[in-house]
Image 1: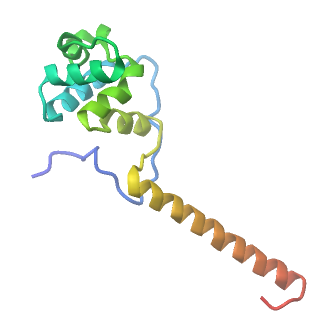
Image 2: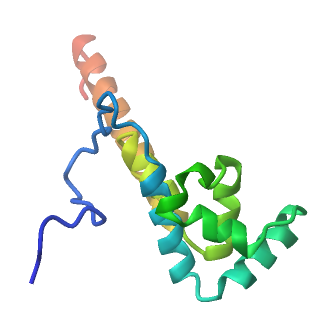
Length: 145
């Protein structure tokens, strides 16, 4: 049974639009905290291990208490620093924050093979458009296309 629109699954034919900022509603600190909490829950390891891995990879001390603060909607004054997002996503094997941010700006992200397929499609469309324009030029010059 569905209770409302699924905001995490994209319609293939829907054109992404940026979320329009409304005065007084541009503070996303609670959303960021909730997303961090979701990532930590889905990480497959406990917060102590996430903190240890982040510390090892960054060379800085990242503690479980920091993760707890970053993931608490009640502690929005301790949001995840932007410069830590990629590292947290790496350790948690997630793209949740990146996808959220890109969606806020009206985009979608493709990773790995999907990114290559998108680029291939773009190049093929460019090739087809160039061929169409070449045929039109030849016709305009009186040549057979």
